[in-house]
Length: 194
Image (cartoon, rainbow, N blue to C red; front, side):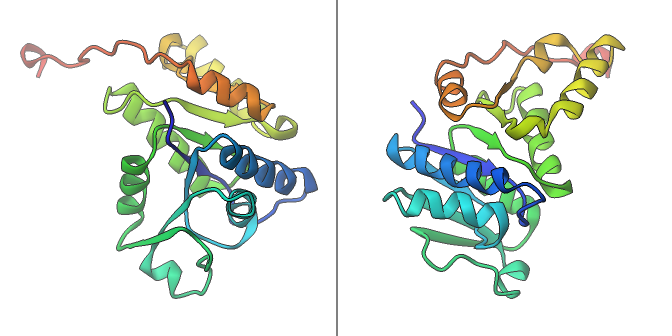
């Protein structure tokens, strides 16, 4: 059961109107399914759009924002709850604590860093939550090709690649997340190899 989902996405809208439309639609879909939204706490860009989609359809929205960004007056003022933290690392940790899965929308460096940290934590067995990409208009096609290349070149196990759920359809993605089974992850380093 997914009570809350963390969404990582851009603090700008990007060049394609569909990015904003799909961010809003995702927020709306979460609200309609009774799934709370956890996100970065901003009112700007795709972050604001996903929050608005959820809030305007009576959903729960929890924002997690570092103090130094809150001082730049980008905090969303209509959230169910806004949690202020000291660092970006504390932000990710708190978002992880509050949610049962992750969806990534289009975004830049920060979005990529958040996605890959969650994937790395899953790979190490630190959590067993579903991690997903909403691949709006093929935004992540090149990244997915790069991930496949990592597998082909022996730098990533196919088992770990397959932890990443992907769809261009919101409801299909949520269904995949609902039925996700995390792989059994063994210890990579044993005491006799240290």
